[in-house]
Length: 283
Image (cartoon, rainbow, N blue to C red; front, side, top):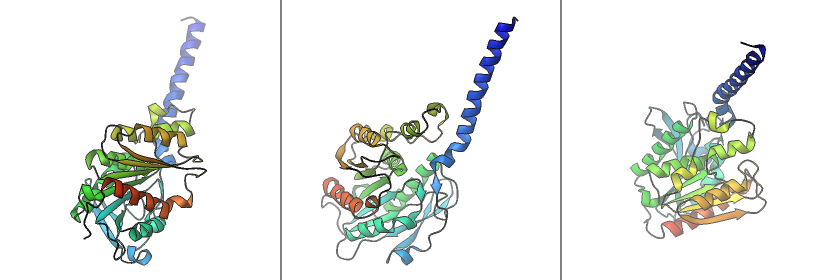
């Protein structure tokens, strides 16, 4: 073998080795860059939300999770449940304002905490979060909330969770806040130098689940979102099979306080009026 060919082969081998190392490291470390759980147990539901209860969820792979079930305020009950699938950070203790606002608008609310969040066992993965969401939907059904009287609300990463859930347990309607067409699209924005399509393990293909769905979808997005860029939420709204409305907040960022209370509750009420109307009797 002549020296020039030898050098070419060595260089090619180093390139292959470097790419292999990047892929291996990316696959092993990426979940620490996706999920930011607050693992602390927020305590009993009734301490933060009067009348609320701790709800046990049994997943199909044998985990016992705790969620909160928050009842509607007296005299305004809609007979409609909202399953809240949060984003990738915090725990249910940080969503009490949202639950209170939904209660005031007559909804029964299930605040889901994924595996690894809020004192729950396990570690988060795309497959695991899908199992957690299915357990939550089945718990609502066991309480008498059929799909025709259930809405899903996904925040950020939770939009991918409820999209997958819609494909197996279709609800009356879905609200997506700061959604993306797929998580790979978000990863490419933040890590453009990485071979995302090769290394990404958890992909959350939102439009793959909702592109042909006839479930009404309402989309909320802020134009100043630097985590899930507005263009990706706009692409999601354009790609869903049944768009109820695309509501845009000019100048709003990803984690602005406006998303965690009355505004989201009002949008869910509008979705309920559009998708359900008066079809669910108070319990």
